[in-house]
Image (tube, rainbow, N blue to C red):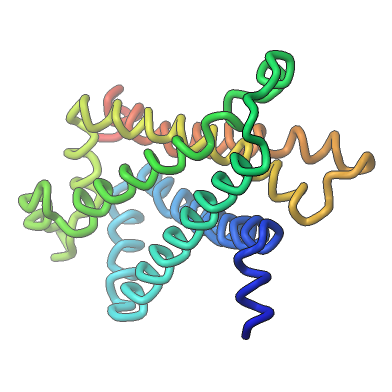
Length: 225
């Protein structure tokens, strides 16, 4: 246990924990996006999926709690890595190094914290019904919670829709650098994998952004109503 604690508190341990928890969160993002895209399949498809999730009861809440714990560990590891990096490099970057770094890499910590704040609001908005309790009174023709109508009403508010899209921009920036760093942490960033790893992160991030942003944009454009 002592050796494990020392490894966990080391720079390598912190980076590996951040990479593993990041991979788990990435899997959640993909699954969440797949469910959200059912909005384009219509009310019945979306509400059937939502009802199926609700039937899982405590299993669903256990999964949500697990994701929040993984999120917390990921952020704690990121903050520790950031502190270690600053301690190991007390002098400021040279101008050339700063220009060489991507915007995503320079803002990854801030973007992650802002995304966390958005996730909390998103849970209060659509999951817990704190901000808009009237949404949970919406019932469809099959006497199920009308999640489809809930999403449409939520994104019909332009402030909510624009805020959601802005958060997805930050998520995409975070993933762009995070996925590239994941390959590096696992030692897959050598000369053979460098071109692939360098392009995969931004490409996947763009696809995920388009997927998430398409829903509020479709609501605002009247394509989903």
